[in-house]
Image (cartoon, rainbow, N blue to C red; front, side):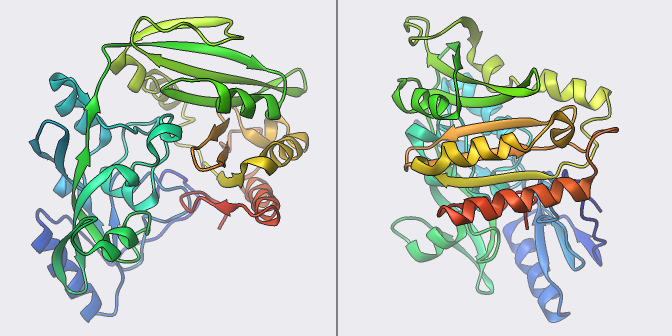
Length: 354
């Protein structure tokens, strides 16, 4: 069995597709009795075997489903994809405050990892916007929230499955705009890109470094919700989109990458959190030693300033034919992690630097 990263392969002793929290509990108990790990797996979008096991693989898609939608919240099974959540809430004019760029990942998977999106500078991670969880932990099915078992609630969110298996979640919702205005802002350097992300007022903001003439060019994307926003200073291009088209903007790219077989290539991704005051130097030094062959034909470099004085720097490599081999990409990932740790940064543990 492989995951999206395509680097690690593991064969589980068995695969269980539970249809309820009780069935998850029974599978976890049975695995423990046999001395085996029980690892939840949603849509398998991990990049270094995090969703794989040689024990019991729990196929959480058996727990997919939207159970109830209220004025500002929705209850869903852990195996529900964010695409499915949005399909249920958007007809009511509501949306989760934070969405991943790629919607075909599960609620349980991203909440257990943290879940960063373009609105995280305003709303935090997806895990920050969970109101309550149902979890298999300590040999039973329990619920937890800020008011009920708060220590478990905090441990499970972002805990990568180490403190329990999330089986259901109640998520916060906010009003969804009908349309958005996406504004492209070219930037002179990594430092300038971070400045723009810090100073521009926008509901959704992100940044990229793109290969250009043997070097790199930087651009920010500032997305204003609604039709009446004035483009930020420095904007050179705008695009008006329906909210769903914007939220699902990766779908055409993914379809093209699937057709080109790039989606099935190994993806040695590096993702690190950096202190904002040291981020530009780490980004510039990392890019200075990279070529397009080190990134891959469909690789992407993302820069996202968060609200905590932290920057998420992501080098999303693809091991395309004719480019650097996987081993070299992994070695480069480890150099980036070392660089990040040296300035007080940390690894985003869904990547391929481990």
